[in-house]
Length: 391
Image (cartoon, rainbow, N blue to C red):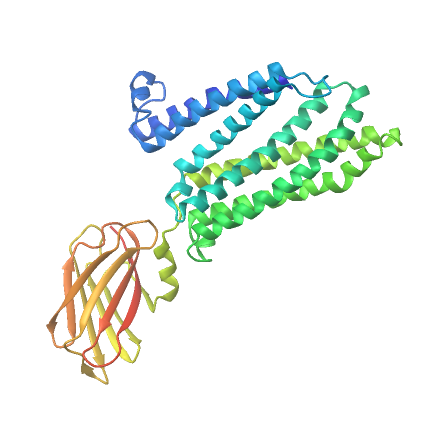
């Protein structure tokens, strides 16, 4: 077990800086082998600083865990003070390692930050216990002789099953909480890349839980009675190995999906505006007429291109007569990326026609155009139109 941990920790210590090297090379358009030029850039960005901090925290965890394994004496009836302190230090270091990804990722950028950071930490902690325990059982299966394998698994598997069940519940609950916190609308789950990655991750997690139920319902009961019925012990151990191997592979897929998820930006809160839109227009020049709140609204956007000086005009009529003297503002929200809202006052250029020219569509994609109209007589109303702007 100690050798397996040393190997895993060395792999982790090497993999983290290699990942940072590849990421920095991709961002700076350099070769991954140009290490001399890349290393000074590792802490040039918030992402790079976070990965460097992760490497330092992981290195401290490895040292603390190595010390805990070195002072551990399994043969003792009671643990010594040194063993307890070393174990507590290793657990604290592990907890610190799991804080870094959330502090550098989406959790720290989503309000309420305290709650999202807690969800993220619990999610990672429970997942680490689940996956780490499965790998530990596989290590025990392959390193122990057949004579002691079944007795050892008969003790360990029932205990780990309880821990794994609690971990799965925490992973699922915190995952749901994070999804609710990040998703401004339900349709964002299938209409955005971030939401689709969540669905893939959820599907893989469901598959892993299905495999885990096989261990809970078949392997565990047989190993519990293996002491009284030795003939069922070895077949149960082989079944356990197969199910755990499949479970580890699927959870590795969950980890990969989580890595993809961390590289995608969650949909902005403005995404939810799309569900209340009265019309969808674009791409290209817009000339659209809609009826809303008892008014006829005629929208003109030209040329409707991103990063260009576009002209926006809204003609408002009621019962065939132009509505003059209204106060009209136009707010712009990008529906696919978090960006500051822009708001402009439209000027009445002709009776009932309100217009403004501005380079408001600063990026391609879907924009929410929110017209807030306050007529001289009558209640104010809001009209939202979704516009697709291309380059």
